Length: 612
Ligand SMILES: Nc1ncnc2c1ncn2[C@@H]1O[C@H](COP(=O)(O)OS(=O)(=O)O)[C@@H](OP(=O)(O)O)[C@H]1O
Image 1 (cartoon, rainbow, N blue to C red):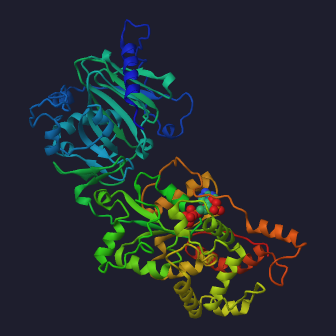
Image 2 (image 1 turned 135 degrees about the vertical axis):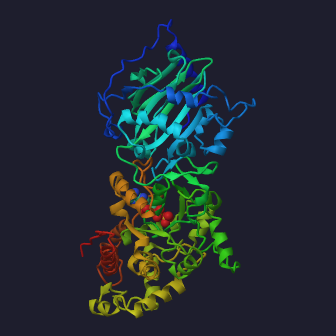
Image 3 (image 1 turned 180 degrees about the vertical axis):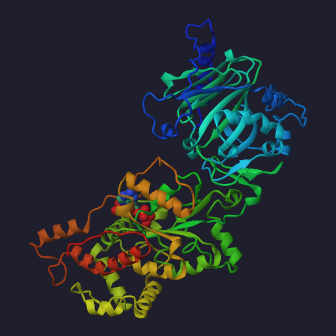
């Protein structure tokens, strides 16, 4: 988060007083202690008494000074016109023509000049070699001795740039963030520092224990940039130039991307994309298909905490079911319509970023949605399917649809069909509908008795597929959310149509109770989710709270109350079986089929066990 201007001003004034040798607060430089290379492990898990900086070596920087001296002491951000020459590497106009412009938002805002030689995106997906590095043998020759004394190769360097800090400027206390920070060593080499006594460069584990680092030219030092650091240039006339280098313990895993002079890079906070890569990732990239009430909102919220995952304009686009525009006849028009629900134009430029939505009604509505996806999103989308123990899912569904609390739009989409019906009435209605479609030859709806022999014949048969199609056709509606109380819990049946059309590898099936059980499992799950999207994971999630939760009375509680009133009699017609047990018996064979499917595709086990 950006530091507010008043705080920067306050820190600047404090720094000036620490620089003033006459002041009682004067801050002397710490002794130059060489602790060698700081181990990267200390960046991820800092322990007490580890040095936060190390004075690595001294080196003659005269050759580099010669190259970068021209024009370093100039404010290119003021309105004043400055002349540009091809030899002035700092001039932004020259750099845009002969090198490649890069935005570094806060640095630019502070007026810091830059000569970028090597740069990577924040997720270390690519390492870019800039024209000034590629084409200027003199620069490479001047930098090489620095790499040599550090004992590293160019292939290990992922960022290499020169930065000129204007006079009377403070970069406030901060620590660097982004996945690259923990995988790289940060080295500073003061190159042009006319008055080192005016530079207050401090680093430390916390704001109270910062140490001032000596910034004389040629002092090569490493800092732990995952810890706090700040710098003030207290001079009123001189810019201060440092070479800043980030290198890995091993060579970067890919060959560098060599940029051509003047080409354009599109940047987001964490990504870098070349203009020639625009449009290489079509929108959208993923869909959370369902199941409804199985934790899809949480999954979407966690997914979009990744800086490369850009939320859709609305989480549930519904562009393939009830917002589908029947009037649009060509595939191009339909695609254009659906892509309006995402930040498609922006994403076109940023191929490293991706987007998707979560419309949990799609899983059940495969009849409408699959052919539309095939027609308009004809690239290998990634799908997420969340499942939840089906009785709990049904209760949550009923509680949502019958809740009078919600916005006008929410109340409208939930529908009114279940408003005056009990949970059990809705259960019975859905059972009847399934039965009438020929879906339950194995199930005695009245008694709750399962016929294993009939199931053996029927399960997975063409007759079951036909009955399921009929059910979808008759009972999956567009103008209401009040349908499919039990059908939405028949996960294997729902997945069957999807797996007939798309590759199993396009799906990741997650189990609410298993995969979002606690913070630790959420972190583990999200690493799998990001890998499924083909993007590098992030180490921390800011918010792992459960989303879209609701308090409601369970039907089991209601049943117990009813029983008490009726003197211990179960209300379930003719039998003494409790309603929960009835539902568990109903779902059990479907759950077993899901279990087999999940094991077959490496999605693990759902572990819903009923004591029947
Ligand atoms: N992390 C975690 N742990 C446990 N339970 C969780 C979690 N995240 C979401 N949930 C529960 O999932 C229910 C909401 O699911 P959805 O977001 O898919 O609902 S919706 O279809 O988008 O309306 C809703 O269930 P109910 O509270 O029973 O209604 C949420 O409480």
